[in-house]
Length: 446
Image (cartoon, rainbow, N blue to C red; front, top):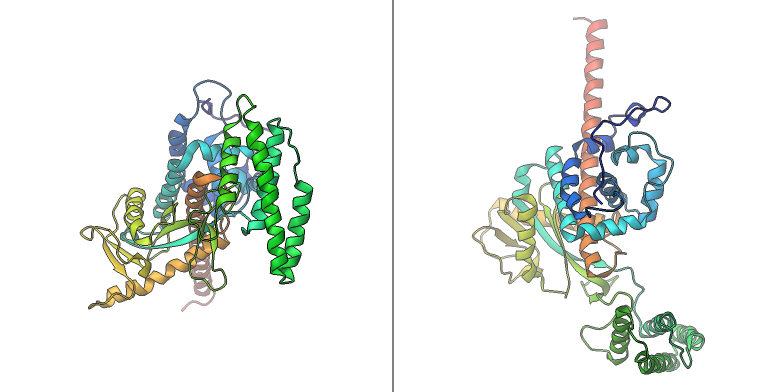
């Protein structure tokens, strides 16, 4: 049901102080809350609720918790627990009085993300751009020149090895078979755990023949259980659809070879891809490729896309610029990229694309813009260390899209808060300087 808002102003409590009277109104988080158009959030996400049923939770609370989660890089459980301890967070989410109970169950965070979907998270990113313009964190002229680059958004999976995948597939298959009511001839879970432990010991001692023997034994155990389940699943009247998908994954795991393309790297996350970005310390990363677009002058995130299928960078530039135009309301006039985008398919009549190390006569301004392209690299690094771009815990391909967009939201909010703190510090220094000058005039007249 739609969240219900009372048409009358809330009644004041005579025995409790309002948060307005307790908190410092100059705090950056309070000034940020005053700049966010919460009424637009209600208009945007209100129609997503059903007409009947239990009244929904306040939309400002749910949106505010999503903002705080990615602003401080917390999990769903952590942001709900810390909300109870922080009165500034409660004010940010629209509370009038200090609350002593958990605002929601942490699972409501997941349900709200699934409810708003990719379009809703993209709109939340667009809202941060509007707030950045309102607080003068960025200028409208900054949106005309952008830098675009790609990175890897790693999934929260263990490093895939054949032995670990066989053990994980066996345990998952046995668990789901028991849930479906299948009586297996033998589960091999104890023997598989011993073989996996022995495989690790042999590999550590560089005894690779013995390690491969244990790996083959794990594959045999998984194959026996898989064929046993296949024979007995036909007797189940209506096996769950998820169980059928699991059987397809196990079959894919047993048949894949070393040099195959599109291999399975995780049993619970089959969408994980293997990407090589040429890093010496990390040759391979397992997740999904992400395209990032930022303004050249202020490093503000104006576009983020999760790109499944490991596409070529040059083929993704047109779609990234289209998203930037949708979020900012104007097509950028200049885009600076690295050499991975050579051979792009962008129409140069609207957007001038500069590729690093390109040949030909260049003006001083173009050379400066090409040097400025490198500034997007630390922005990506901050989103990975200060946000959740470095390890995605959301499930499925939709989780890859939502996590990428919300990481851009968190990066923009951190930039806005930093700007608000700097503006207030300059104001305090200016006032202190004026007061000292006035006192000097009073006590030491000319």
